[in-house]
Length: 167
Image (cartoon, rainbow, N blue to C red; front, side):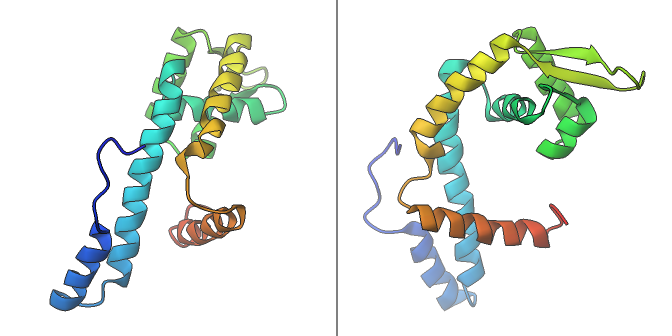
């Protein structure tokens, strides 16, 4: 995944040692910097797997969410809540999916103020192919055992909970 030769040392640990020496305890700085770097690595890997399918991660997530719904459709508001996105971002994602024939807007059957977004057959088929692509690379998460992946998810969940991501 790296497009360059790896460094002969861990730059984050080098920075942490200098931080410890010149500023103070580096534990939190090293952890946060590591998370940020891993985010870059994962985004690059997932984007690379989704690009041949014409999808961004946000559009892929929306297709997956619609697939998870019992009826293949959800109110736009719910899509935004579940994906934790601003309504404007949801509108842009749905606009792109609709323009590509992967989703469509449907009037809500009981609430004239609400609009549903529904996955199309083409969207479901593309979601399946894109899922094969991202799972083939383990979403870019290399170097961990299954148990470590669970531990990582738990630890990051604690941070997300503390930040108010969920109750």
